[in-house]
Image 1 (cartoon, one colour):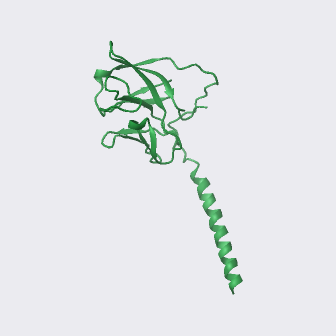
Image 2: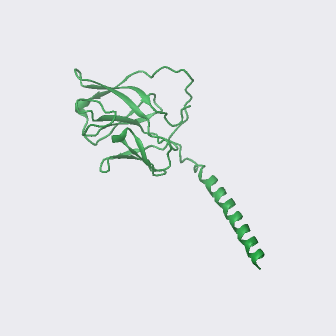
Image 3: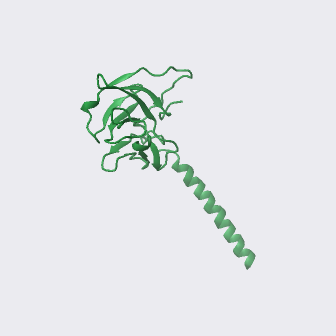
Length: 173
């Protein structure tokens, strides 16, 4: 009777493992339209740094109210945020203005800024990024931080300019 019980247990465990593997694989494929927010963009190796893009005057930004823009091209939504306190990678007199790609590094769903939490959150798989720590992934499905948009602030004109991307935007090679 002991061998029969061991055999049944072994069959059960093998079946459970196989079912778990199938369920895990099924979870790696998005439902139709789930990641439609991102259209893969081919960037040939050796592309030059993207051109600078003026994002407006720092004085017009309100703390905690993100401003949308596209960079380095029209298929790359981004958020410009004035955090209200010195922040990693921040520009301006208070070093509190940062910008990030809006495409989650997990599957390209658009993240949004939650001002009450001071975090960027993805609604698709609940990944959370911290803009105060350079877009670091706090929790969720993503395996990399959110790409930070390099900024420059001209103190004479008060203009903020996007000058490059620090990290890999979802859908890019």
